[in-house]
Length: 499
RNA sequence: GGCCCCAUCGUCUAAUGGUUAGGACGCGAGGUUUUCAACCUCGAAACCGGGGUUCGACUCCCCGUGGGGUCACCA
Image 1 (cartoon, rainbow, N blue to C red):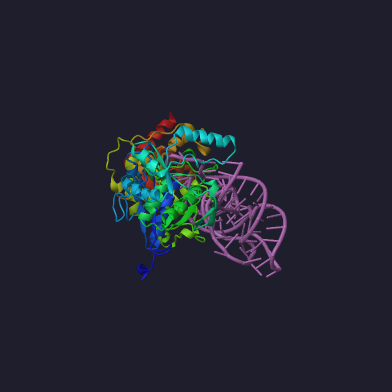
Image 2: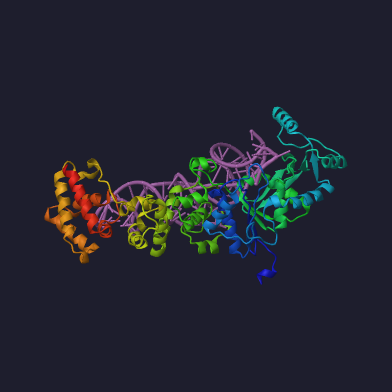
């Protein structure tokens, strides 16, 4: 019975995703959530979402909603969180202020922390002096007010922060699941702030209090947190709480180098959705960058759920390989069953088609078109450029220089004749015979009869009917458009080439 | 700059002392073909450098070098 055994890395671990509601989650950030969720689920544990909104200034209204939407779009579900509740709530830090104050008092009475009344100006002065004296920066002995007096001053309303009394000597060793022990000289650390002057906790304090309260067993976060690892270790120790296991993943780099950011084209999860990516392909890609399993590249959701192991995370920071993401998305689109793809295509086209096209879009028409383009698009947003001519009534005849290329250059009249004859021959097909095979036969025979290679004739027919040099398969397209419209377009193209 | 982390094809990665260093993206060539794709075949492409340890190092250790992170009353 695994449930009788204590929680561990691989037995019912509890992991959390603790985003700060300051905006839409970006890919590097959400990868952390995905990995935590995957690991928790693989080993029968819990995945918790907690909102870290302790910075009033940066909090953005509505951001929580966007965070939930991002996770749900990716198919990530949580067991406990702000919206679903749970036994360790509330899961929003701004609603846990009483908890932090209760906890900080424990340390206050033990004199493990101290109130600091220094003004920002005074702290700036200290830092300036440190800079000039080439002393390692950091607020340490800024002030040392007698505890009793400090409480009186605080009670009377004097602004203050609570700082940790960091040891001046010795070494703090903290373990990282992926990197082993990491040690830090205590004298390089500072008396970091635990409670800000507005009464809110800092990340450092809230992390320790909450992750202990919520029984988190494995903390995964970005590499940028390694430098504050010793502070967290020291804090857990000060409380006498057991430290969770930590796994710091490397940062995702931008193609040019440096941390991936908006400037480098990093997008939020929801933007990937808008831009035509499938959730499963993004999920697959996110796991592929910074993690690997043998020779495998494509991982279904279920495979990830059974294969993903936190311990196999790559240490070197990975570059965001956008080309590979696109390729991956293309393979996911191709692997969709036809009904699912048609449904996705319909939804996308209703977004992308010109406003004068009536909604909802004809479902059976989309179902006819879908198989023609499923293996031709990489992003769902590519579809519109390939299929708009099925809906747009007046397909423009391209300028001659685009229309008459290669063999047809400067041979407008010949092309016009070939097209109008094609129109006549297509028109002769009876309605009951109007199908792909018949259309192909007619056009091929027409090409042969006027001494053209099939491709030569088809290239101008394609342009005339679809308005494009590149289009979905021609015969099917002509069939779907219908006889009347096809003939009409051929004739109007012939007309314009004769002019 | 101090502290900390990291290092296999251009990119994502596999290989955990013994392999012709494997796969994928991208790239190149060919095939297929009504355009474009898709698909198939083939090809070029890597162990950062120097010392050790070892019978034997991509794998372990040290030193360089390079890249990254962090130095807030932000997370």
